[in-house]
Length: 268
Image (spheres, rainbow, N blue to C red):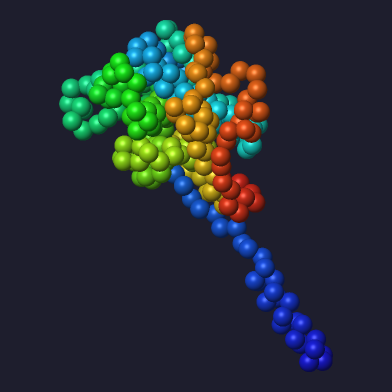
């Protein structure tokens, strides 16, 4: 073999090694409380203050839209949970915390369970100092209220807490990062897919291994600014999209993918 051929035999593998970027999978996990037996979850929301009701409806709508986007892009045959506003719902929302929690929390969700892993009803308690004010708060107050509502509605869906300050399911980040974009993460959405679609739960921890880094900015699902939100639907119907979910998601969703080559995953 000539010197030229030896050089090519050495150079080609080196070039391939430099040009080909491997996809590294990371493992994420989130605890879950349990699952609902029905896909429609009714919310009993106080009618006043009206701004607080609108804010909670938009938080519920953000969860509905985020799940639809995840379903359409990753698991078209999967199921999604849908929040609806209903005076006969199985989730009660109150403004004010139970005695014993007011000094340590700004939101709390309690459950009644069937067995060990099926949610029968839930009661959400939101900080009365935020939600009971008849006057609509400033932008900071709206941002805080929206993030609190997102977090507790995530808890209603069955999600546990994460130690990730950017994720809406981080209970500490909920308050300290109220002025930052409220992020619904890939593991949040994958866990909801599992809870809504799998026939049974073998564990209360959902694990995902993926080489994708995807998140949803909930602000962009309901309007870039809370002061310019589209009005939440009135009445007792679904608070999610009715006819044009795909068009609305295409227009408003902000997400990021890194090395989005495949989606290996498992539940353990």
